[in-house]
Length: 340
Ligand code: ADP
Ligand code: MG
Image (cartoon, rainbow, N blue to C red):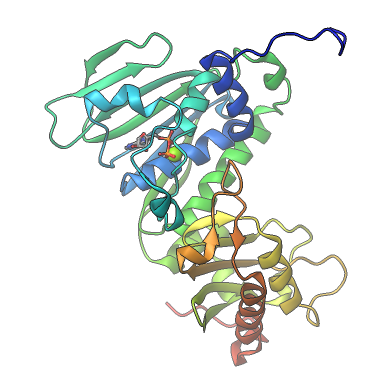
């Protein structure tokens, strides 16, 4: 097709629109895990179980004990831009749920074989919706939802080629669950791969969850952060300098419970270690920022992993001070013992 050969403008078919949109949201199995766990948490789940085959490429099944979806609503759940989480611009500006774009299930369904099995507390049975055929029939399960995603990218081989080995994809899936697990110690998480139990984190106290996810040594190798600066509250833990790593892989930052990768936060946290870490040593931390939702825009990236702060200087200063204060507290110098 030469650039001069002008073709008429056409509207793309729905299926293709979803596949294009899926490219932004679903990069690999871990993206599916992230979206489905988000949904489970938004549904009020207290237990989330993840089952994977072949690093998630053959199967990702996520089961929750949340509120479920009514029979009549099941087909809507798979429609693009259909959501129960916001209804207006005002809702969007103060959104408190993980999801709000109404895109994930539609996107995932367009690049996989998706089955949605759900039951609400009020229903006598569960219902199963097959996304490809549209078939909806009664099925068995307790209150909650199971989403099964099979053969990811089977219809888009170009995407499939970018997948790495099963072991690598599994590692990314586990990291996605870890990010959620650190934010929600009140929820139990279980991960199975190829029929084997790979992770089990029981619901409990925040410190216990930190130890479960980042290892028993983490509490002793880190200090508590507790800092309030105007509309911002920062909590979490900062690793002592001796706990620094060669890779920046243990830097977890959350804004209102949402895991984010944010240059302002990363830079601020790193600068708190300025005089303590040299060369390429990377600090370890888990930071939770609680901020008035109207002071942060979470709708800047399809995967919602990036956010924009209304006042990023204020955030930078607060994060830096929070981490500095924690590190200069008496316990920070030596590897103190965790308090139970
Ligand atoms: P969003 O999360 O942005 O609303 P999704 O495509 O992820 O969009 O989900 C669409 C809708 O389906 C949600 O708004 C929710 O009402 C429903 N839903 C999806 N997953 C679950 C779940 N695990 N439990 C209950 N409802 C769900
Ligand atoms: Mg969602």
